[in-house]
Image 1 (cartoon, rainbow, N blue to C red):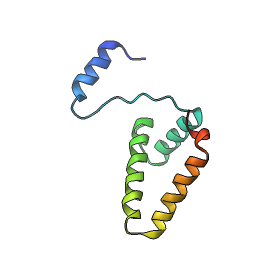
Image 2: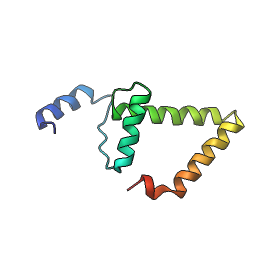
Image 3: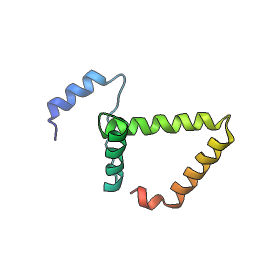
Image 4: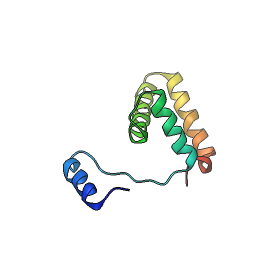
Length: 89
């Protein structure tokens, strides 16, 4: 656990470009973030979250002009909503 002093230093340094995101997630999600970080040579779970958002944005952009990507995106969204309780809360 970091000290209040080091947290303030981090916030002061990054206040214009970053905000801290603390979320509770199932252990399986943390495990998948670790695996994602390892698979794509990322610097940990925080960067894995950023990469997952980047991939989602890329898929969403690709779906605008590619029907197969649009179908995949719809399928992923439907599967997540169907099984939401496995991944959230």
